[in-house]
Image 1 (cartoon, one colour):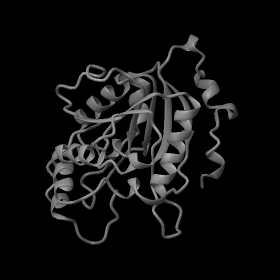
Image 2 (cartoon, one colour):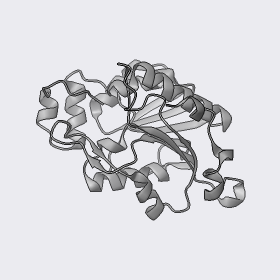
Image 3 (cartoon, rainbow, N blue to C red):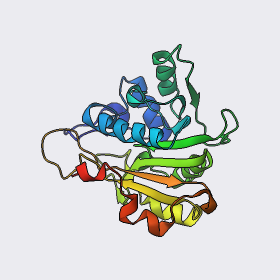
Length: 245
C-alpha cells in the first residue's frame, strides 16, 4: 500500500493489469508496501504467530508472498510462498537461500493445481493481496485457489467492502470478499475476525491500514469447529480484539 504524494511512479501510471503491475514494481526496486514493514508488519506477525501456535499449524502456504519482508517476522515450521511476479520469487529465494524450511514458487493462475507440488497446507494465507486484484476473473481464480490450498484453515488480511481505488491507485480495488465466500464456499466457517490495531481512522502519523484479519475453518462440522452462530458470539473473540482501535 502506497500513500498518495501527488505523483505516480512509472510502474503505477502505466497500469496494465495486476500481474504486470507487480512485476514492474519489483523490478523498479519497489517493495510489497508499507503493510509489510514497521508496526503493521509487527501486528500481523503477532496475530499470525499466535494463531499458528494455538492451532498447532505445521505447513503454511502464502498465496502472494511479495518481497518476503513480512516472512522475516514469522515463526513457521514449514512455509511455501507463491507469487505471480518472477522478481518477487527471485528476491525471496535469494533472501532465504539455505533455509530448508522455506520454498518459493511461481504462481500461474492458468496452471496452478492446489496441493500438487507441496500438498495442501494447514493454513493458507492471503495478506494484503485481495484488494490488489482489480480484474474479476483474476479475483475469482485467486479465491478458488486460496481455499483449495488448505485442508484446515484459511487466513485473510484485507479490506472487506466494495470500493474502487480510483485514478490515484489503479492497482487497488476493494472487494467484499465475504460475499464470494458465502456463495462459493458456504461450508467455510468464520472463526475469528480481528480488527486492525492501526485502522485508517487512527491519526497518529504512523502506518495505518484498512485491512482486518479473517480466519476461516475448512474442516467438517464434526471435527469440532465453531458453527456460524458460535463464531459470532463472545466465545470466539480473539485476545487481540481488546487492543484494537
